[in-house]
Image: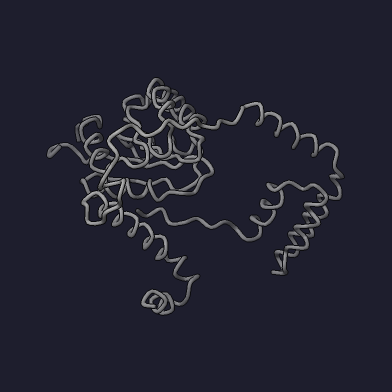
Length: 136
Length: 139
């Protein structure tokens, strides 16, 4: 990645839950790994998240959820991304997501899900290896 | 005590919140804590030491039936049709005035609740007067 631009990551917090400790810890870890990280702040709608992703021209969207509403918000985000043509963006999710939901999320295009307790190193490595490569 | 002194020096808790100091301190601490666990500078039995090898017990999850959401929406719509809407409007207006005058809003909230104003309507009214706290999004 020495020649390309820095990987740009949007950490997104959809829905009503305001516990963003995990989201911020992951955001910091990605930033410390040399990426540019933008955090949406709390209580974002899927529309706002996708809009920010477009405005900020991000390569990666990390969705953080622990309210149990992941099966409501994430499919909506994926649908909007598709509608807006952001199909090359790497989407990952993390938080309190039951194991049985992970295959369903992957089916709709989430590349990886990192439940609570995932080592930061693992997330950083995954993003470094899977973020879309871009010129400029 | 060092913290309390720091907060006092910055002009008290409200300016400290407004400057994002508190939020930043918490997120600094959270990141430090997580790194300490991962670097084994902080040992938590079962997390980074003496971790169980076997698969954790399967726990059956409680899932809310989507029907519940539908029913709840219906109930709210029903109450909006059957309550005295004129009264609700008046009481919300009284609540707004109380908030504007910086009075104790609790009695007004109670009156509004008793007339079946919704939580959204009550909070919405207060938000129009007080605004809404937006924590810093700095990471």
